[in-house]
Length: 251
Length: 247
Ligand SMILES: Nc1ncnc2c1ncn2[C@@H]1O[C@H](COP(=O)(O)OP(=O)(O)OP(=O)(O)O)[C@@H](O)[C@H]1O
Ligand SMILES: [Mg+2]
Image 1 (cartoon, chains in turn cyan, brown):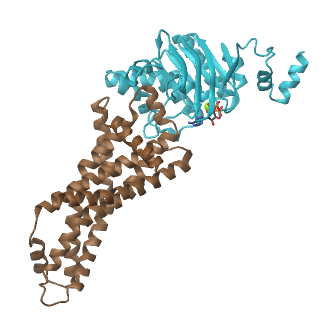
Image 2 (cartoon, chains in turn purple, blue; image 1 turned 45 degrees about the vertical axis):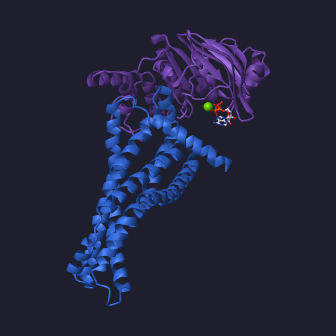
Image 3 (spheres, chains in turn cyan, orange; image 1 turned 135 degrees about the horizontal axis):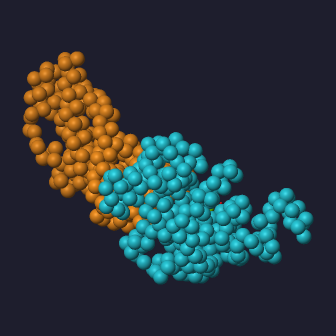
């Protein structure tokens, strides 16, 4: 479970997060949607401690995370996997070295065990024969998959994905979404996903939060998102002319 | 003024994070050897070429400047040795390295910063500053003094080569001059200088890379700043060390 209470974040004078509160359960994909620049990435980075929030509380199950020191945070971070918006693969390392990077740092596993685990994770994201390639030799979709493989390397309890399918074609997007959703259910992870892709929402949104100008102004799930009367949300969901037409026809 | 004080504070804070015990010594050792290769071994060719040429030029210049028949010819060797060991092989070589190694370090770390690779490490709970920067500082600070020695030897060799080509003086006069009033302390002084300069270059360029922002333009800016700042710092440090050690 991940819980956030009244989180605020400023950059100088500018308030990017405004009193964000939510509670997300394990075994579910919780989606945060919102326009570009609404604060999704900043929210995710604040939750994992890459940004220092100005006020508010962040809880990982029974532990309050934001008051811990760097070394105390380490213990929780070993339980967190994160896929960055731009994949953030280490370009000095091969695919295999990328995935085993956290293992080298945080486990005492033997060489063999590490290789086994690497191959297991790569197989889990449907990648084969790429172990010795470098990130710049992969397509965007493959990079995302390696990013996911690296994120699940240590079998995390919490998984964060920042726009896992931006820049991918619709079919690959759905595959990646389904992959994340499957892993979440399989290992009972608490998963938070940033996206502005409505397909993802309809596909895997067990719980959905809509963030607008740094405020979480609507929370619900994929069933009731189409029928909400939140004006900003409707503008976001039915942004295209086609979607507006469909909505009008529906009633 | 306020900004540079802030930067100094930020630099000091970064160094405090860099100089902590590595998470795993095995990983540190691997990075350390990679960085020896990248920062020290790869600098050998350029330093070698420059040293040979400068050694030759110094010999020609001194020989033509000592026209007075009362000054023995062997002074050419003596002067060449002194200028190489006192200034060229440490300060000049360090300034060259500030350009080569400094821009390499700051753009490498800077592009890791803007592509979120550093965030990814921090997020895993890895002390990224320690992992990325400490091996670089250690490799250069420990092994660059050997580059200084090499540069010194090759500079003298360059002098000898130009003498045998042109015959301005005889090789035995040259070698007599090289041994005249030789002070081993100068070599120690120069190696220490080189070590300090290497610390300056690696730490300052890592600093600029680590706090790079603003896309690839930002990375370019930070590597320019790294070179300028470390060059100025080298000149200042040169003054201070010389005052302390040769007084
Ligand atoms: N390091 C920073 N310094 C100052 N402002 C920042 C910083 N990072 C983000 N911002 C600002 O915070 C706001 C939210 O940015 P954020 O990256 O969270 O948007 P986003 O919702 O993830 O958008 P996108 O969908 O395009 O990724 C933006 O207005 C941005 O300018
Ligand atoms: Mg974003």
